[in-house]
Image (cartoon, rainbow, N blue to C red; front, top):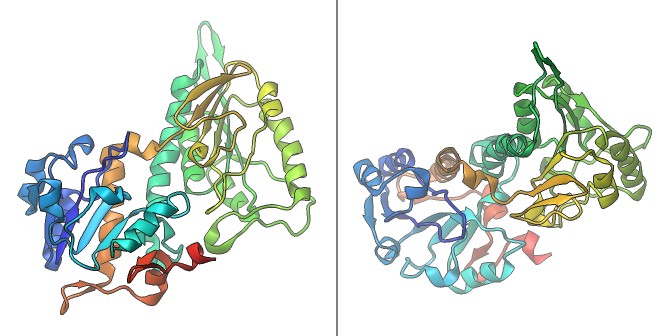
Length: 373
């Protein structure tokens, strides 16, 4: 059983899918591990560290030759991988909805593509969930990005020259990223409020010392979709939410938006008119910019000035913390494969629940129900 780790070729991608820690663990299971030369350099892991952990290090062609399992952070371009064993697995973040042609190509190549972002949100899969591990770091870094762009201090300061008032931060979307953003903004001394379409998140917001901002008196709106994700809201709820946000956002200094709906464009949370109501110098970090954006006018990978407000279209925030994000991502992959490792066959054998959830292609075909519907 050969596990091969390839170097990320996507622009701006600094993470790596295995670390010396997980290499050692895979070898302890009985696997051979091959790592492409330079794969971990951007994450502060050199080739010597992989070699010391027991991996063989070589060129992309050498590493992929005979590979049974290919590990990556982002799905590699089909024309960049070859020489792997028939029926080899590819485990990575594959962006199945956004890169459907690439998924079809994997099927044609005979790969069994496993989309780690399709990991079901069940208790036993928590340690395998790349979305949660990466979002946790991204929520933290989003607040630092806002702080860096903000022309004032976050905490209240009492000085001989007078008082500096605390910044007001508003977190929109209270998933993993939102919760970490709340905690980080609080630690930095901001006055924090937060909102979400899921009413169950009120207690989480309060537990972190922030103020919940929720639509009231709109019956039957819970916003809880399958697997704990948010779903589309009714028109009545959207109108009530827009009115609530408009009155609240005008008073905020920092806004972090995190709302995503799997398989669909990110919901629009902040309109141009709402941006215009904010005071000059305010900062918004749109964490959903890559999926279309929560903020009108935001552009993925760009920082724009709109009505005097700095709008940061965040792109792949986790890659700005490559050492920690790689460590967590690689543990997610190890936890996934090791949980199903069959010692007699010396390979992982997926069960039906998780296997059917993450498997995109098999036997030359696209087989995942979420892509066939």
